[in-house]
Length: 379
Ligand code: CAA
Image 1 (tube, rainbow, N blue to C red):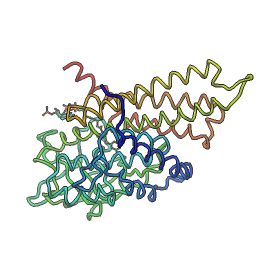
Image 2 (image 1 turned 60 degrees about the vertical axis):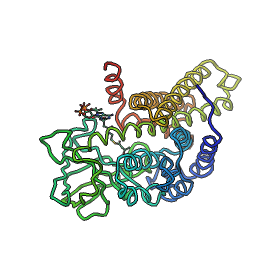
Image 3 (image 1 turned 120 degrees about the vertical axis):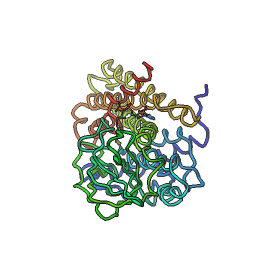
Image 4 (image 1 turned 60 degrees about the horizontal axis):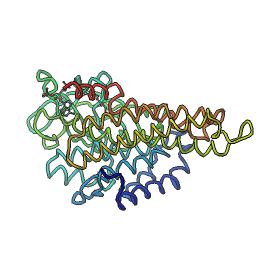
């Protein structure tokens, strides 16, 4: 076993840390209040190569490994999870899905601009009545010979407005159940697509989340990924990697709140000494440190397995479930350590607590991860 990072991995981590601590921090509170999409930051992150970091250089990506991705995601998420989720969806759902399962033509046409960060991708699986129960797709993609006709509604779609390349999961043949589902690459500007209003969310308020309505949208047949009926398996396989991204995001939220708590505990005095030297606070910090270290190791293990070409579905579910759950615990304790200041926005920890909550919900709730893990344990 080797717990050392390579020089390249450390450089990537440092570049992400520098950008987050120097630039994202400047307007993260304003954007949390306004919900404004961080257009200029996403452009800068693209220029730094973070939007397509996992994509092979031959498709204009960064050619970086998944371990580097975990390190970068943690650093960005310590400061601004709204930017981190754009990065995660683009890299590990949309780019990965097209690179792994798309045709050469699809990679040329759709992957390259996504990898360069010129376009942003969105992953349209969830529906008003199909969130956790993802096989119950109501959106239809009816086979019309040379094209599909798509109708239906998708919900809670990250990057719905900022993104222009959609991966849409839809039912082509209901009689075949999940084997009748396809994934289509859809241009957001296609006639018949409309967006619901920007969701007024509890956290990650400046990532753009909308419902997306499809009304007789024509999608060329060549935009289908894989064989007819591959769409559900495509979604499941792609989410295995997506969950490494969200696990790393949860890790970053937890470690961001932890770093702020350590700093505060060293400065704030009560009863004649810094609060960190009172056992009530010191033990909280110790518990937080252990949980974060465990979460980091689970994220890195899942990433390492993926980089080695070994199965990583259970490992990524473990990383996501654990990191998301401890992110909620750690950020809640961070608010407690900060006391009254923790309840005030300028100290950031209440925002991190609100952001942590979403990591227990999207890309598969903590309960869904336990389904995935327990099925493997019992198999
Ligand atoms: N890899 C390959 N195939 C898989 C798979 C995997 N990881 N998981 C399931 N499958 C296959 C099964 O083998 C089965 O195929 P066969 O019938 O050929 O054997 C088929 O898929 C159906 O699987 P199940 O019978 O296990 O299906 P299920 O109805 O019991 O559900 C589930 C499985 C794991 C609960 C799944 O529905 C699930 O993951 N739900 C959560 C959905 C989710 O994560 N949504 C997130 C939305 S995306 C998002 O949030 C992005 C964003 O914007 C941030």
